[in-house]
Image (cartoon, rainbow, N blue to C red; front, side, top):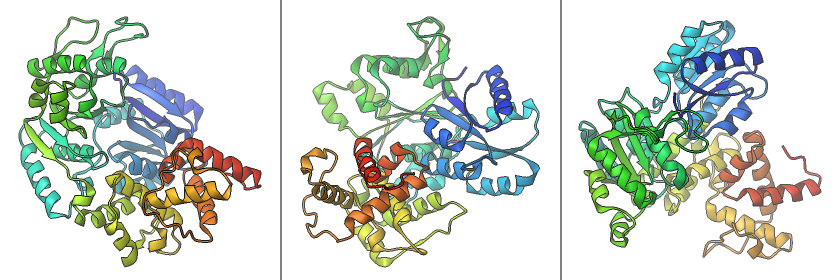
Length: 457
């Protein structure tokens, strides 16, 4: 059995149940939904593959595939299609789907596709975009280290693309056709992380209803990426060190030794030397992980990457059914002059906002809404409603932000919120993330707009 799940997106209830039963009988964990909108909500780090019908009411499978590729470019997607949409399925493979199946199909075809692509990395080396001399040198170094099985420790600020670099190393290695399994050590509750890493047997603890392999087992013969390793608690560090030293693991509640053939890559935005000095991270474990250290610089230290990454993000978010816009010189100048405290993650948000705000075929300077701009919008909105700024805890107005606000600022904010909601089919959480505000603030704004008679998507 596998902890990671296959997501089935099929609006035919009878067929959906048959697909779930077939994959479950063949040892896969399966989650199913009936439409693309629910699929986007269900998409989390536990999903290892997606099977999606193309022709569905509302958002179709082709559009869903593009949305998933924009959010999780590494996730393998297989489209299911009738004869009438084979051409669209073939086109979808050019946009990121790994394969397609023509309906009706035999159960063994479904199982073969699942075995071929489940938990595989569908991203490509092209996702590690470099143009600056600093990162060009880093990419060359990554290719060389990929040829070995040495453990690599990637340091760098949050949002710089450490997982993308780790995936690139995996793609360049002899393990490229084997699983790439990533786990964020800071995102898993402390009492669950050990079970997630090492696996457990049925009855090992309360709630363990069946046996489950851990991430090490899932990555067998491939690569395991331990992100935010600096957040791991000391007692678990000792257990991890033993697994790395012995190259074997025992599931919780079992005495059976499982021998491992796994390459380990790790990353952190924590100052590891300081963590070692403070006693929060084991020095012996750090040296075990840090055989080959690599530092991924923040975006502000590699300015020539900004334009190249922006172009890549435009390609990803536009896909094949929208003409990719040009970025005007003044707009690009604004991108290049900004400090990017949120690095690539922040740049991605800005590009998505620009696609919402733009009209025509060019992104202009006024379409580039940086985080400081959304903060000023928050301030203006609070002032216009007669509320003190302090009630908007998420509205961090940057020092130096202009006090001379455009007359149509409030109207632009309303347009931005509504357009983003429509783009994400009314998904509140995703809209809040794109606009860089909290869900609470978004709910407040939507409530105020409803009171004014605005139709909310």
